[in-house]
Image (cartoon, rainbow, N blue to C red; front, top):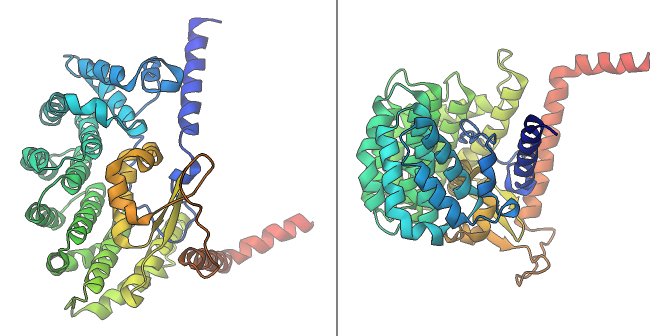
Length: 435
């Protein structure tokens, strides 16, 4: 076998192993009617699996430990060649995602932080800056910093780039990364509030590209969730008053992802205010309800069927929250535990952790203490063989059974709507089969 054939075979094996490493239970089911993933950022934008050195990240295929891999990557981050640093950042992202390496990182955290901060500020390419932002998020998720030092040292510079850069992908990466760092760091409520106001100001700027608008909206949702977790519902109400007109306008935005992200934030605001029994004081509530109902039942022919279905799925939950105070419910299955999401606050946190951790979400759900703290009340151990956790048995009247029934009913509704729109095509196809 020639060298080229061997290399191609190796690439195929690595890609296959990568796909198999992520169980279906750790990713969202696109057919689930109880949630949307509009705020996700594709983790595949800059990450490839073409290098033979990727084996350094997979302990099952190599004797190299995560610590050795981290040392090797950190050496590459000091190289002068831009391509080498970009490759190192790709490897670092995969290492962080598919391994929980807190013990390996802690002795080197200051040096690693310095390297990533330099890449954020002085990266020689857009790709290097985007990858550095992703890696910085993962560093924060791994370390779970107890003070605000990391966030405060990054805030001004990252906000400036997010506001002034002419590169959309860089702005999106910086917005998402800074919000996650703020969320997981030991910042006080004033930092969360301040950053939220800065994001609202960015939201109000004109001629902002759709991906940037979506990133601002989803990041603002994460910050609002952080304020709720800190018991700052009154501050959330103030943010609602300040931003609701902008959110209302964005419900008419041409891009479906922006419309959905705006709608999800509206539902999040209403959920937080309702839980604290706060009066939203919004005098145009009837107009807002009419708007989101219109988006739920939108049958515009200039939108694709896929877009209409995605929007209808998302706004079904949004309307239920705004009109009836009902929160979304979904269930994620992992190897040793299930996670039940039953609020928009939890949904926003889940969206962002999934965006950051991608295919490694299931690993961090099992091992990362930060995620255990964030989703602890939502976790129920599945009691699989070999674990000490009790098996949970749900009655027919449990919330999960109710959610499952609602999901099936929603699926039937979607099917009826599809048949109503496409009955002619269905009949023609059936007649052709009969002939």
